[in-house]
Image (cartoon, rainbow, N blue to C red; front, side, top):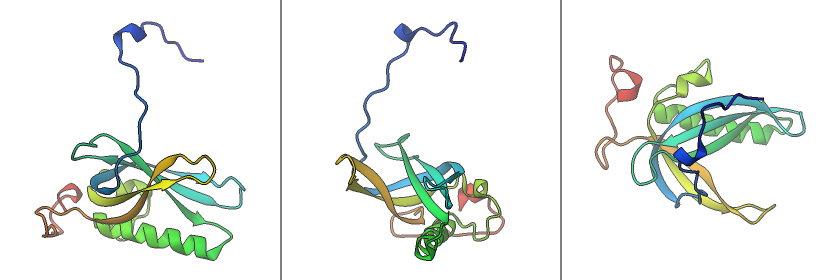
Length: 150
């Protein structure tokens, strides 16, 4: 139970129903990460929340789930490869905690996918790369520059 004294819904615009964002490339950053158990309880996945930080979809969120602990070794290998892509995109090669990947801009490739269970169209992140500072030119990395400038 939460105390909502002082809240007036007449003074706040309601949320609109969000449609999936169009397929394409977006500049985004990880804003949240959490290790969660799988439905079966036989493993864990890392849920990453990405916020789009540029363009017409600025402020929208997309998610990725990496099955880093799973009885199926192929599932783990796929998740590790995806995590490697994320690490390379933000320039953090040996993170000891997922928070080290937060708030660092990268480019994500988003696809639209129809869910098997409901038929709804949802977004899925299919790729990660370094954010380009100038179209066609990768940013120069420097060990003296802060992570958000890489």
